[in-house]
View 1 (cartoon, helix red, strand yellow):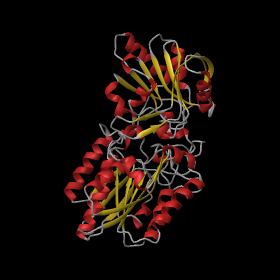
View 2: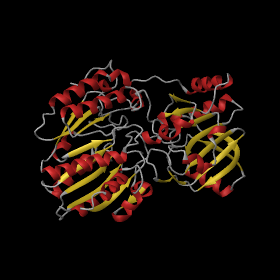
View 3: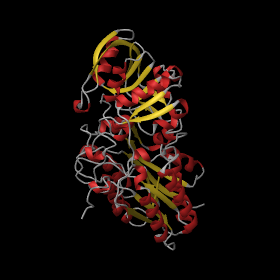
View 4: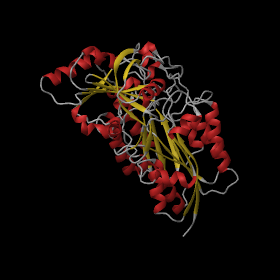
Length: 498
């Protein structure tokens, strides 16, 4: 039995370039901050990359693994230079001066820093320089990564999530590690191809249960099998990261004797042919609320989820816009309404000081970016207080511990509103357990989210309606002041870049 000496590290972050709230070292430390055996213990049994790593190691006792820093942060604005330097410096120091057979990195791939539009790839180049030319470097990515093709100079093996919502994080890690194992066994070093396309699809249309991305994933699987490729991964890019690499991308990992050209050409043609299928038109908030109430008034079942994707925290939203909430208030319905959520640490602190059952008079939203909607007055009571901690029980990141910071449930008549100390949406039914919410008793569920919440909530909802609201992650990309993404990538009427 040949022992393999492997290093592992993780930096997972996607940045919304238009979010004014910088991502700090504290944001990483709060969400995920582990290393060594503690990282493996925290990941065991979870549907995460580290969970996949643990499963792999359980069946490969001949692999000696050193786990460096593993961390992630919510998708806020660009990452501070201090955070990047601290995290990458720690990992590079752990890698330096050691004889590794291989290194596995879990990256998101759409990180943006204050002083670097592609910090993931700057980091990969540094990792390769530190580890030397011989060890294998395997990387897993989110399918929303904005890949710099230069990464092929550093990376031997890559694979991305093949599902959205991302319920295959652990499987993605297993794919990358299995390819590494195959390379060790055969002695054949894999190669990677990264082929960009000249458009940037909206992630609203990237769900893999149906639609264009589902079709592309099926074609990718067929091409991989037919052409004898090790991996085919299709990337949509992260639309709200303003970088030169924000676009659709096809990648292949293959053995050197296999010509990837025909497969890449077929995949690019299939992707390009579906460009228009990613476009989407949504109702505005008053229209969506009126339609939901009409459906319910005619005997339709609830809950109906009205989804404000433009302020989705996992798209870099700020948890602060008010268009959907204002429309719900203006409708004046007597039906039970649940709204998730507003990010307001000061108001949460005030609610906790007042105590459960206390009357509260406040304004909700509009404190960070009132251009996306003025604050909405609210009179009610503090119905419930929580510490914001629970463990996911749905399929996405199953088993992972969540820390929202403290939260509070406010009530006014039949409307409940959740406020939180951190900017994180409800993406798992355990969020309802934490807040004492029975969805069977809710008629309308207004939520700042997009696709990930569907993994746990879709079976519990009668209907899901996405709503066009003002925010930092809009359907209409022309509303954003891009500097690095050509308008022709998202506006078919614009001139192509020279």
